[in-house]
Amino acid sequence: MRSVLAALLVFILAAAATPASAEIRALIVAISKYSDPIPSLEGPPNDAAALKTLLEQQGAKDITSLADGQATRSNIRAALEGLGKRAKPGDWVIFFYAGHGAQAKSRDPTETDGMDEFMALGGFTVSKPDPNTYILDDDLRGWLVNFFPTSVNVLQIADACHSGTLNRSAVAKSVFKKRSALDNPMAISLPPPPPDPARLPPSAIDPPNLVYVGAAQDDQFALEGPLPRGDSPSRGLLTYALEGALKERRPNGNLVSDLDNNGQLSLAELASTLESRTRELSSTQQWSSAAVPPRNERSVIFQPLKAPPADERPIEVKPADDAAADLLGGKGPWASIPRGTPDLTWNAQEGWVTDNRGDRVAEGLKTPEQLTGVIMKRRAISQLAGSANERQIKVDIGPRPKGQLYKKGEAVDLAVTHRGGAGFLTAFNLASDGTVQMLYPLDGDGNGQMVAGQTRVVMARTKVVPPFGVDNVVAVVTPDEPIVLRAALKRIDGKRDSMVAAGLVRDELDQAKGQASMALGELYTGP
Image (cartoon, rainbow, N blue to C red; front, side):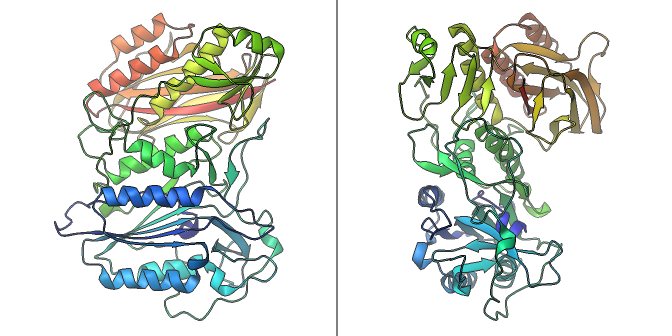
């Protein structure tokens, strides 16, 4: 159910047509301490503190925080009911939950999947669940509907997950951990919750005032881990992605996540940006989902935060063999570290590179120049992720589900789906070592013009060949034929110029003044 899966995001400053006296009110719940066999978490207190700071920067004063043992079912219910009594028409009420989510066998015959989704609170035990240590999705939905009239906007934020499987097996140990309490949800059933007049049965119809932003898709885990570096505090990926979306600027001062470049960040724009940012941070193990009612799509939510200082720290690389240790002793955009959690690990003799998420991002890397290509490509994709507008354009990589591994010789389909006005499609690939590879339009493709409405263009059908690792497909749709962009991309075709390519795309997006859109796609390959 989205009401439990819905994961971190959106702290609303003001909706369109909101009265000037409207306020932000919030309940922040963070659970980090659990009993075996449920693992405790490190990130929820950091997420909660970050959210509280952000809300205070937006002028919020009515903020209630509950953590661990204080965050019981009855206390959360009472706090939400209290917010409902204090809220005025036009206010935004934010309910934030960071902790474990889970599923269990349902006693409710109306649950179509036979499962109950719930938030596992402090003190929850698998052997003897206490009804005051968990909240069912139907109970929470009932509270949000019954305590808040439709004149009050409600945003539910839950940096949690309830079940799922990662699409792609990691080849090395990852620094990320999942926020799912139970590996086998069918192993337990919950006792009936206390009778509650505010409880609502499952419904396919969402209230017009209720906004959800999910940390992950239904078949994925929500993750937490050290961000931005291996020695950083643990954070939920969506919380961290949100902060980045509110800080990174264009040359003209607007936020990169302001996709139409009009100086205002709408809720629809932020939701789209977070999908790309969470996917990039997790190497396609997780990407956010959102349900934004029509009346709130153009709502202006956050004001920009202070832009972060330029990150000039070199990428930390740990050698996995003596050959890599020798090569990393030279100059390059890296810092060689003998231990700890690096950004990348390199085995020069075997040629593979893994990242701190456990993915093998490149193979066949024998030289420092090739490693430099990997590092610069990572920076390029990080820069582009915040500008992706996946409500307008999406890169489709098939036939496997997104994020799965393709092996040598297997067929891969590359296509782009575009929703919007007429435009011109340009696409290129950044190979695992940062090599730029022009994809579309090539000879015989014409000028790449796409008609208005929904259009799907098949760019290529190909087979997996070396170099293996992580490729990133970049697709751009512009209102006018991008003659300069295409000419520049053709000049660097076949070269390790990923940062140049990223700069060209960002310039094109800025010059189009919100009329262009861009999307990213990830392709994972191996021998």
